[in-house]
Image (cartoon, rainbow, N blue to C red; front, side, top):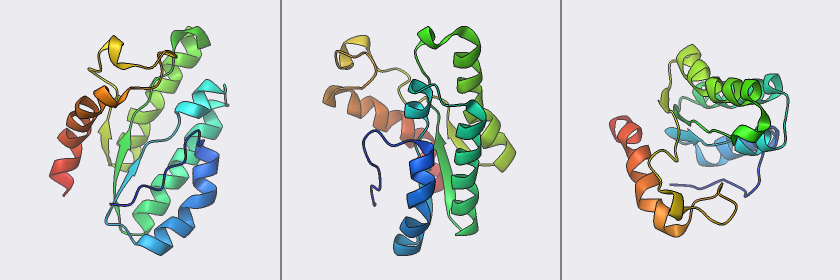
Length: 140
């Protein structure tokens, strides 16, 4: 298991770094958990979608199975943007026939978030693991 994440990363940053990571590690499974920072920055949804699609295609071209972890953003970004952002992940999963965790923070209790109400605490990690493993285990 290789964790190639960088805190605060956007999908565009992931696209820049991903080819070298694929070449170096040659993974059989790739878990893509990017997009939340795009949403929080108000990035054009078409750019986020294109970047996620690029990551998916690159992983598949490297013969890796892909698990996409869906993200959501707070409602203060507007109903339309928030709804369309959430819909990106299932749309991409269906388009590319990949596994999807609709929202990786599903089931995390309110008190298991940091003061920003966005980032989970260490206590939330077992629930996140359980949520992700439901889709990851069959891929192993």
